[in-house]
Amino acid sequence: MGALKREITGWCRELGFQQAGVSDIDLSQAEARLAEWLDARFHGTMHYMERHGTRRSRPAELVPGTVRVISVRMDYLVEDQDQAIGLLDHDSRAYVSRYALGRDYHKVLRQRLQKLADRIEARVGSFGYRVFVDSAPVLEKALAEKAGLGWVGKHTNVINRNDGSWFFLGELYTDLPLPVDEAEVSHCGTCTACLDVCPTQAIVAPYSLDARRCISYLTIESHEPIPVEFRAPMGNRIYGCDDCQLFCPWNKFASLATEPDFAVRHGLDHVELVELFAWTEAEFLEKTAGSAIRRIGHERWLRNIAVALGNAKTTPEVVAALSARQHGQSELVAEHVAWALAQHEDVLETDNV
Image (cartoon, rainbow, N blue to C red; front, side, top):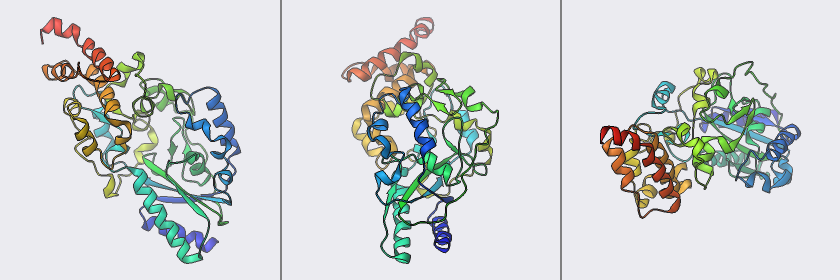
């Protein structure tokens, strides 16, 4: 098993993963933390977080026969962090979470993990396994921590001391009794950078995130109107939020991704809000094909951009774009457009824009 594990580590590098590790399946501590988080209702409308009971924290209940989990990570940052920081709260351009600028990571990592499983099978014969990439009740961050890939930081993302936190995670549940790696421990120390910079104060305590306040949750997971109190703090963030990572000191060690599939598509790293707001549903579907962004649908896309336009600099172009969608929209979109236009009223009256 030790020799096989060394081969697996090499195969993972060949398949484009920056690191791989192996853990056992004892997630009792993470299970207790999850229960506390759910009891606090911090998951909001993400009811799937409680739907599967202990299968999320007990891998052998989800996939019978599982005794080990191979965790992998793949870098995805495609530009210097200073460029992203410079785009935050821009007066006319959109900010899209860096992980969603290229091809949907689910597809990329899942295909590579399947290739890993195929190589293992070619070496040892038929074995029990199942591939996961953020697609089932899996405590991927806790597993990554146990496998030595990094530690769960105060912002609840996994941090690697050599490479920061700009990476995706994937797992291969297996019945092979591979040697396990040493779990990582926290190196956040007294730093509170992520708590301090969160636009909506969603990190309510170290290692505790109230998703109901998180811009990523509000713009991606939630199907409801964005609470008015969070609209101004959203700024120009139309899909996800990276602030807690952008200002994390450990990310000074982050490396840029080498995976071509994560290259920016449709100029989403510097695109104008007005341009995106003009996309028809057909254009949205075409331009988000193969992208994680497509999952929110055109209606929520417009909802999010309407808020960002409400926070943008008042210009004739911004006002015209919002006015063009005042009518004939869903109730959800129309309400956010009305709010956005209201944010420009004072300037309109003063400057007669």
